[in-house]
Amino acid sequence: MIRVVLPQHLRTLAKIDGEVELNVSGPVTLCSVLDTLENRYPVLCGTMRDHATGQRRAFIRFFACSEDVSHESPDAPLPDAVASGAEPLLIIAAIAGG
Amino acid sequence: MSKVRVLVGTSKGAFILTADGKRKNWDVSGPFFRGWEIYHMKGSPADPNRVYASQSSGWFGQVIQRSSDGGKTWETPGGGVTTSPQGMPRGESNRFVYDTSAETGKPLTTHQWYDGTQHPWEFKRVWHLEPSPRDPDTVYAGVEDAALFRSTDGGHTWRELAGLRGHGTGPQWQPGAGGMCLHTIILDPDNPNRIFVAISAAGAFRTDDGGKTWKPINRGLKSPYLPDPNAEVGYCVHHIAMHPSRPDVLFMQLHNGGGALRSDNAGDLWHEVRGNLPTDFGFPIDVHAHEPNTVYIIPIDGEAGRVPPEGKLRVYRSRSGGNEWEPLTQGLPQSHCYVNVLRDAMSVDSLEPCGVYFGTTGGQVYASSDGGDTWAPIVRDLPKVLSVEAQALP
View 1: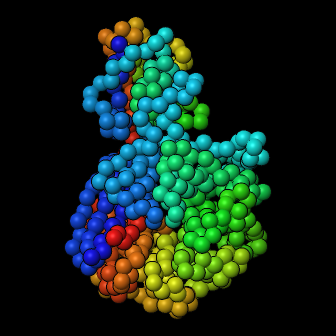
View 2: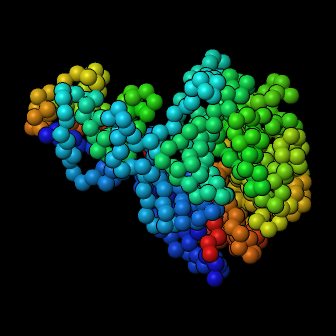
View 3: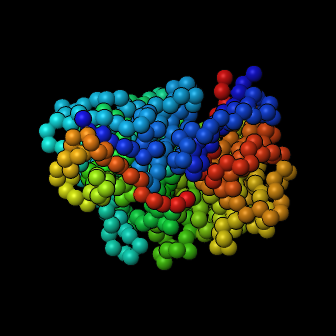
């Protein structure tokens, strides 16, 4: 079971309380986790990755086991602790003002 | 007794203001979509319970919201779990992807950038949603970077009317400081094949074949920002308004260079009707619901900071279709007022007498229930107001 923590605005949008738990089939990568997340909550499509290009939106970051994996290949395996559910994948909205 | 609903989009969420026909006592609900920018909300003329909202954020992008109960509850169309044949999620309702298909002629994919080079079209947000006057499930979206999309399934899916962006002038279109946005959509109430749009800073365009082909309608416009006085495109049109009883007569607020303009032939030729207006700059323009020759403008100092001239917030009204304008000040601040009123932040209702509404960048929403003679704030301290849409309800 993969655990994912979303920023507040996306939790509100998807009507989620607390963490999300996902069953990810196949290798646990950033891409497979996001695909599974968007499949469960289609309203999140386009909010983390650009609809047209699939690229990470500029002010979204992905943290795993205290590491910023935003610039890693989306097809690279996530750490074992995330794959086992011991640690959550954190989806972060970058600091910005206004 | 009839009621009125005023939909207010702000930089931090949406608000819905409602009153009975007297329009003296208002209920305020919201914020909806708290913390998100709501560039525009509008109810369907065919079914006032159907309301569309553009919800966006610099972090999370574009979301389309829809209500089927007049704004009490909201849904993201198609937000339920659906899967395409390839197994990937859809979430199509938020998907605005420019058409590059061969079927539509592979429209141009670059426009002019600030440095004179060509730059790819990149979707940023929906500025304006225009529901069809006939079908609650048909709605048009004007987006940045400038393009027009249409949904015929209540916002579930969107398809670009690519003939506009594919117009031969496309490579000359350029963004203003506020971005290259399609902000005005006017659907001809008598002719479903005729649509007017306006783009900053490309100008006004018209289709007479339901969106397949478009022509620029900028003759008569002036711009101090263009070296060619007869340029076909490149004009920073701020807003256009039409009275439904006279779809060939259009009123325009232009960015400098004439300010207020009028066309009597569906945009084929424009002429200035600025008359005695104190400035040639402003953003919104609207037409009285029952008097096609009565027009409202809120002049702003253009080059001098984009604030009301002399610190006085004044709506100007022409009862003669332009040229002769009277300032309307009763109930509006006449000293130390330095707010702006954005292009989609003025609206009229169709009650009798006509109600007029506008919202400011300072968070006030002012209402007049007597055609503009007197004004009072409905609310004073909302976030920056981006859009105001009034609609009479049965």
